[in-house]
Image 1 (cartoon, rainbow, N blue to C red):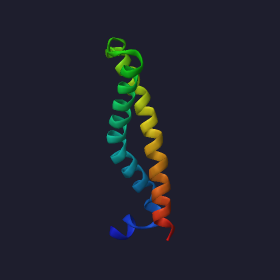
Image 2: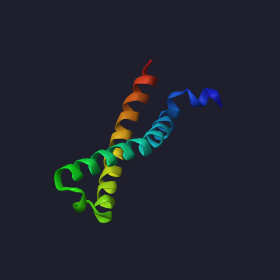
Image 3: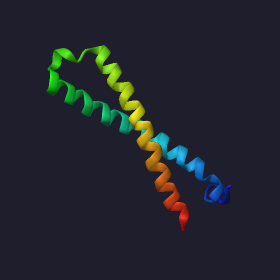
Length: 81
């Protein structure tokens, strides 16, 4: 079993595991930064629940893309040697 986990065939398993592990903290970080930026630019009264939900969807998409690309790069670099 351990031979499979550290072989080239399990590369996509590691990419998926790392992307999933990074997704939630990165999404929260991006969401907090965008909400704070929206409050700073437009005031606290302009950032209601609907706007926060929209910003969360944007942060989710950005986080998924960023986590996948970073984990793909990292794992391919790790398995290169």
